[in-house]
Length: 299
Image 1 (cartoon, rainbow, N blue to C red):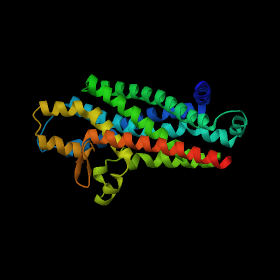
Image 2 (cartoon, one colour; image 1 turned 90 degrees about the vertical axis):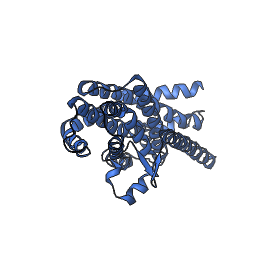
Image 3 (cartoon, one colour; image 1 turned 180 degrees about the vertical axis):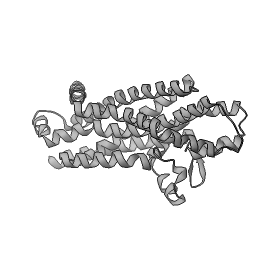
Image 4 (cartoon, rainbow, N blue to C red; image 1 turned 180 degrees about the horizontal axis):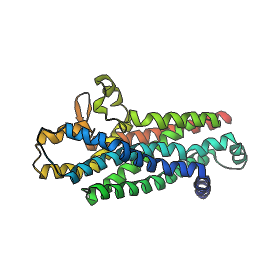
């Protein structure tokens, strides 16, 4: 345990000392927040108005709060996974620059080394994503605040679970990478593609029926929906208090993926948590088994 703790501290320190990896990870959510609020806010506004009946007026604060919550849920859903991949690149760097050989020549258990990468990535990513959550909440407070303390609690829980998912997924993928070129290629693919397949950049409700069914098998989709639900819950309650018909509120929830459907069956929030938790457990188990098999082959 002491060796594992030392290795975790070593990996976390190296990550934060590497200004390239650290600032890229930290700035990415902030840049996304600026881009979303600058260029996509009007798109989200128009999308929201299109879901309302004609001559239906609502306060600007509610519109801004709804759009702001949608924006931060998209940013956090993407960042929790992409930052995990960035933080976990230390594992690949150690292979690429030969440090892994120095570590493995010592009487060090390879299992401790493997788990140190996972926990160090988890800690580093959580620090960055919780910080990004603070920035996002500050943004919502400046546009239209409707979140309760319970909403914030669940939002942070969602962030933690998505970070655990992203860390486990990146650990498995990075396990096979050995060079800087492979590292850059995977980072580019994840950064550009994950936001689309998890429904962060574009709601899944806007995809074709066939693509929606395929994406409904991806666990990251449910993580995005959880964050959306808890970030936007307060605005839906305010809509209900203002007399919005239930069918309109449900239609809006459908349009922004707060309601997700698995072959036309509405997936409840509790089920989403179970799917995400089960996926995390499976991915961690796979990562452990991969390292066990690799160590046996070396012996």
